[in-house]
Length: 217
View 1 (spheres, rainbow, N blue to C red):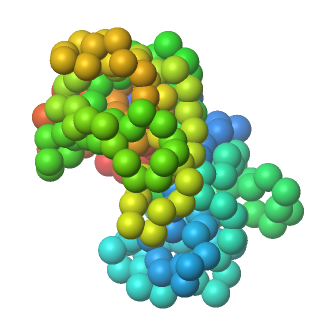
View 2 (tube, rainbow, N blue to C red):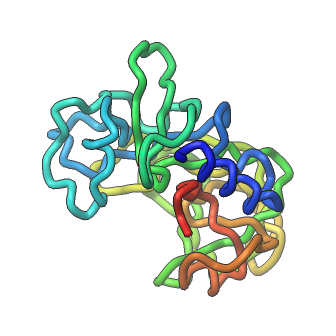
């Protein structure tokens, strides 16, 4: 039954580029853990589907079986484990790991046309470099056209978030031609695929860069 639901979801997502479909073998960056880490920054991966499953807003304690992998570790998706949770292979770790699909970010190919997806604030921070930590040079409004140049993981900063970032060239607006970095979670495909999944997708008329669970309606 689980496999049948997964295949159905993949067929429904056929218009998406392969790197944005959470099929077995797809690579994904694991975002930062939502639970308190006690000064030990780590990715949002555990060694059981049960401890990976809770909503990030409800994860107030570090799971005892947290994988301890670094933020932005490049994992391989093995398939669905349960509703909203993926099975993962982490580099250098023999045990199977688990993470929520909404804590995984795709590997965006260079040359991909993107736009800023600014969420509730209507803008996204634009960084000139991955370092220095947390400093941004501009706020790009939702819908600003971008071209992907690469991917990277910013150094950890306890006062920041969204460390997995896309290197981009701005393709329109006052900052046209500038290159820098935006958080992957605040960018989307310039051409939408299917119905928007959130108000942020409706605002940017894009498909935000993130995997959706094969069990999602």
